[in-house]
Image (cartoon, rainbow, N blue to C red):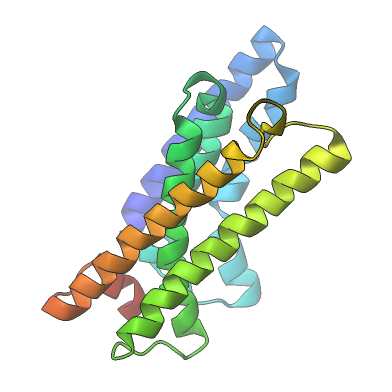
Length: 200
């Protein structure tokens, strides 16, 4: 899995460099920061692992890399947020899925993960995802309020955009939560159980 992570980091960084050159040529200087930060953002787990001695497995890193590729690279660098109407909802759905997986990892980090407590684990997955989705919307609201931007599209949609983002993230967490319960019940060594077991 580490080889796959390395390949994804290399290819995404190379693509970001190509977009950097393209944006310079067309004078899109406001997009350059997003282009050049892609390699750094992709390498953050390895940087944190080295500096803070945090246990980060290859499976956890892969989940993170996929999220950055979908949310930052395709969404911001390729600009699918502004060119594809459904992509923002898709990104929030993926964020719901990935933060749900992260919830299992966090439970293990704090020593509270217990496979027998299926109900608690399911509830924590849902609550953690909703917390992250709420904090994200708080940040967007702060950006709109203090920087006079319109990332929440409240001018055009009122609260609809915010509610849709949170609901779609909630749906992603429900899918992961149910998948987790199924994995536990059938006693298969699926991906979700592998993410947790790999950090033991």
